[in-house]
Length: 262
Ligand SMILES: [Zn+2]
Ligand SMILES: [Zn+2]
Image (cartoon, rainbow, N blue to C red):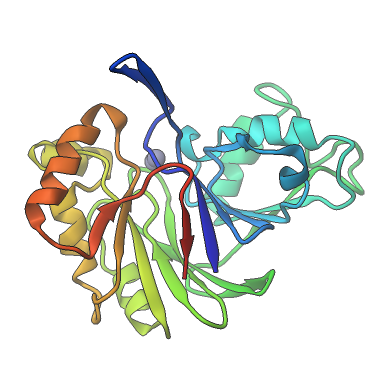
């Protein structure tokens, strides 16, 4: 399984360091060529031919930093694809998209355009803890602990499994489920704030590096790489220092544009 990191930050952010500009993209990951995990960043990093290959988009929850790219994706794909892109999540998340995003007010309802018979997107509701199989992947949604209904995922192919936390504060179910996955090869876990903001992390439903590590070791076999993502860019330097201080070679921060292979 190949995972291209399109965006791994908890915001859309730009800064200049020593005269050089650097962008930070919100959550978006391309799995192999046809499956996206989160839609905070899709357009702007994938070319039109790449975008037209997308078949499924899995969403952890409906916060904007995870869905914003759906707006320009749907518009860009208009007239360019023959089959709808399937947006997959739990019912509560799909309901937010229906009622508050593709509602013909904020954005057109692309589940009925260009025609209701063959639209640009369609929704697929999934049940928690029940794997579905798409594009040679087995994907299982597990409820996590965020301020809105939110899931993480266990994603498996024939050779490897990974666990993706989604946005979450402390939780147990996903670590139990991931511990049972065969061939677990990596964990992508959020770490939004530095350790000293653990109270802010708690009330906003996020983790810090220390908490992310505490969560990770709930795995029965945490002898796999731990990749942290969803850092809030203004705190990136501090988070980086705190990871370094852990002196644990298994843990590192993801960065935009890199490719992971499991
Ligand atoms: Zn987020
Ligand atoms: Zn969120």
